Each structure stands twice: as structure tokens, then as C-alpha cells.
Length: 234
Image 1 (spheres, rainbow, N blue to C red):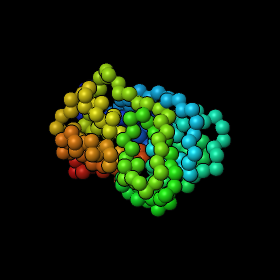
Image 2 (image 1 turned 90 degrees about the vertical axis):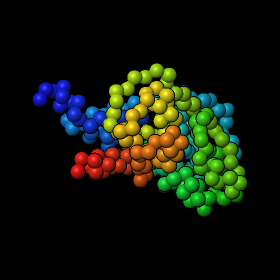
Image 3 (image 1 turned 30 degrees about the vertical axis):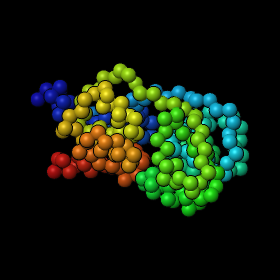
Image 4 (image 1 turned 45 degrees about the horizontal axis):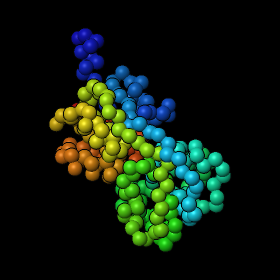
């Protein structure tokens, strides 16, 4: 059998983000048993903010929100509490030397319920993208005094060519929607969502064959991928 044929037989994976050096997916990249394409389908740009509104809490939706906020704040944070949507966002806060007082887990609804236990009636500034779906805020409603702080915008790429993949892993609804606009998908492809909001985008598009990671982390995404592939090949 030729080398080309061997390569074509490998399971192919697309994940909609660039991988850090310590990403668990690097083991697949280095493996001779998988082909992995890691690429964000979005362009990220900072959005300047004039000042930090008075608040009791800063709630960060994403690791990228932490990065763009930290790049602009330019001074020690005032004494307030920090909240993270999940463990990846919490790690980004800790890398800045900031300790989160709240770390969410599970779906936006579950995160909102847990956060309400600590923040009901208080002022919360949500650090977010310009086109954020504000999933936690929607569930909290009037339980908190909510304000938005937009620190970056994410725009879809308009042209990108991707090779067909057996497994498509999406880390946000907008990445999924951009992929669908640029690359028609096939019924046999398998979709994996990083969380409930992305899975909701799958359902809205009529995707039937998908799974959702047990946590919004790359470790959970990889575990989901490997378990599904094992199920497929046994």
C-alpha cells in the first residue's frame, strides 16, 4: 500500500482554534495515527474601553476576553471579585496573577444558577466580545445588576479552504456558523461541541450526529473524540 493511501486512511480531525504548545491535542498532532487541522475561523481585534465601570464582580466569558482585558487595563485591579465561565478562563486569569472567586462548570444555565448563589443583587460587569451571545446574563436576568464591557470583536473569515475531516470540533457557535458558510458539510461527518451553546447551534442547523464535551476544556474535547472514535471502530 502506498504512503498516500496510508495517509488518506488516517482519521482526520478539524478543531476551530489554534493549539497551544501544552494542548492535549498536541499528542494527536505528533501521532502517526491521526491528521489534525487546528485553525480558528475568526479574526480577533481589540475594542478599546475608556474605563472600568463601578462593580462588585468582573465576569469573564472566555480566555480571549481575559487577554484583551489585561492588555488594556494597564493598572492593578481594584478590590473586586472575579468570575470565570469555566476552567480554561480561570487558568487565563491565574496566568495574569488574578485569582477567580468563582469558576463555572457545565452549561450556561448551570453556571448562572451557581453564580447567582454568590452574586444575586450585586453589580456584575461582563467582559465579552462585541457579538457575545450573553448566555449567562440571559439566565440571570434581574437577579443581578448587569453591565457589558466589550474588549474585543471577532469577525468571521471570508475565505478559507479546509480539507474534508471525519470529526469537526467547534469551540464556539460563530466558528461553526462560519465553517458552514465556507465549507458544505457531509452527513457522515461527526460534530463535537465544546458546550451547550455550540450544541444549540448544531441543532438549529439540523445536525443530527454530534456530541458535547463534558466540560468546556480541550481535555474534555479530546476525551470525547477518542471515545467516539473507539466506539466507531469497535
